[in-house]
Length: 108
Image 1 (cartoon, rainbow, N blue to C red):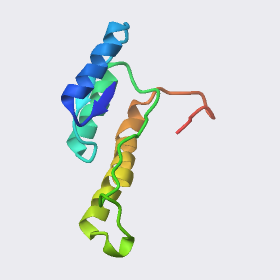
Image 2 (cartoon, rainbow, N blue to C red; image 1 turned 90 degrees about the vertical axis):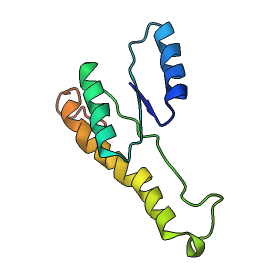
Image 3 (cartoon, helix red, strand yellow; image 1 turned 180 degrees about the vertical axis):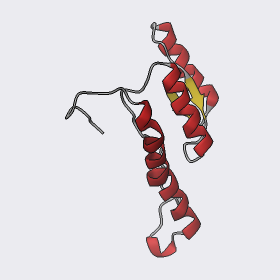
Image 4 (spheres, rainbow, N blue to C red; image 1 turned 45 degrees about the horizontal axis):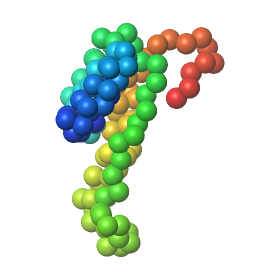
């Protein structure tokens, strides 16, 4: 399964994978949105479960980067939401969907 904010770019990647015989679903959206996270997990269930979750979303906040004493609180909050809160929310949502492994074989 592929996730990203830009549906057109995401679908290009999915099409390339499908051309190589890979079964893939592209789900465009924003991981900070709880409804989108639920949609991702539902898509993973439809594909048979989840073996690996890679959190690759991220923002810097203020761009170009500024010293923290000049960094807006709203920008810092947004960075924390994308970089920390959303990945934890997705992990919590996805754990029940993960393929079961023998004890001691989890890698998170």
